[in-house]
Length: 451
Image (cartoon, rainbow, N blue to C red; front, side, top):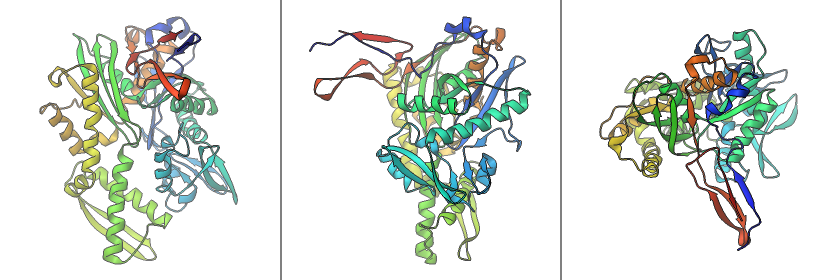
């Protein structure tokens, strides 16, 4: 088969080696680091020789990735989440599960049935539909994400006392190019230039390994968040971070665990109390928030009480959920996380005993069963507890921001990141066949040509 010369560069919206941009670093103002999460977002900045994770106007270091539309205003973050039970149809969350996807995707169709707001098609692109001042309005996932990014931008501006126009934004390592580009577009809509898109587990590895001195070590980052899951295996050697392999699932996380518990209680109410809340959006939102609270409690206690006054038409719901029942309801999903772990080990050609450290990132890694499964997989090896799983990704993004702005100074000058492309990339040839040019886990930037 004859090809005209084709060049494919896996560099567009992916990560870059840090050290390659020293010249441009001097020209950029302060660059903040933002972890744009499915359920929560976090922002940090490199200031006075260290990273500061910035609290929002409520004093919280993580902000719910929620946007709500009321008659008179738009709410973002805690304020949006706090009114979700009284305004469910116009409160948007989990938009990261839509960004860069097609409306016809199975995952989008499944999510559409689980959220209280509308998701409709615009040329096979999922758009969010809400009511604003009595009219139906639609927003692209990028626009909703931009509103969350604006909130993080404002949080940083209040803390720093100046305008911020530049950011490093993180994405799941297993995001494809469309999802990465859409995230970058969200940054542009928010009024910021996204200087880099970097992978979440790699950012967390920087947070973990930035101050580690000594010889080379193999580190496995297990990143289980609210909506996405990544595993990345890398070597850290005196500031050089080399990713060996990455794998994951862009539709697996705490929201799925919550959904299992919700379905369990919905069925229980129907059977035990003859109450059906499956179509009641307000009741579902009340249950969703209470289930999230109880799930968190079960990470530190063996049972927790679900208490919701007036869940539906005067019906008060009160039940105990045990940790054992929670684990039973989600056992298959927990075990599903081990598949990508095995795959990165295989791709990197490493044995289990060659992994020196296991780093847990994302709020869902607080679940004891998840911690136990990964420890058992590695023959009883205990994961490292040195970093905050909620803040590590924003921390690493802020370090990258410090390098680009020059504010990192001596403490970041030796850091070099060699990341990989998570998915194979290629071109369509005669007959609709994809010819791979760049295979997954290739170090980037790279380019390949074919004649």
